[in-house]
Image 1: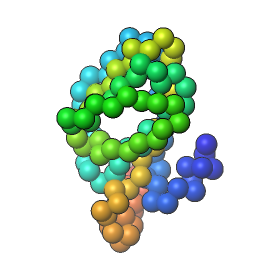
Image 2: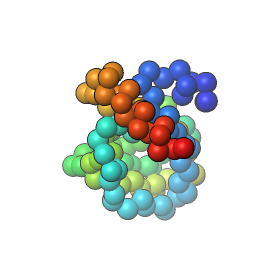
Image 3: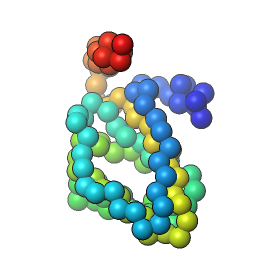
Image 4: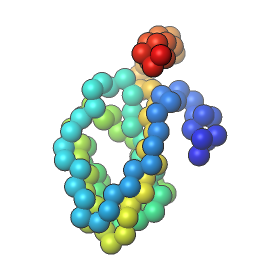
Length: 113
């Protein structure tokens, strides 16, 4: 997983595994900026899982990757019967130029020190 994420073009260098047990509802929220896209890759237990981004609600399917701008309001439900595991990672927004990505990456690295 680590090698795959490192090989991604324009990686934002932020990833995690999300586990939702049946009956979980992640309340509506939004990210702080639109400089990145959030990518979901449902791995197991996706049946009965939904994600709403703005006005669009989608059914999650194992192995079906999708990306969204998490600066839009979004929320998730898991009404399935087994724990849902999703690989979540971020990539720089495709509308940013390489120079803008370089600048924001510099700021991000500086903030982490």
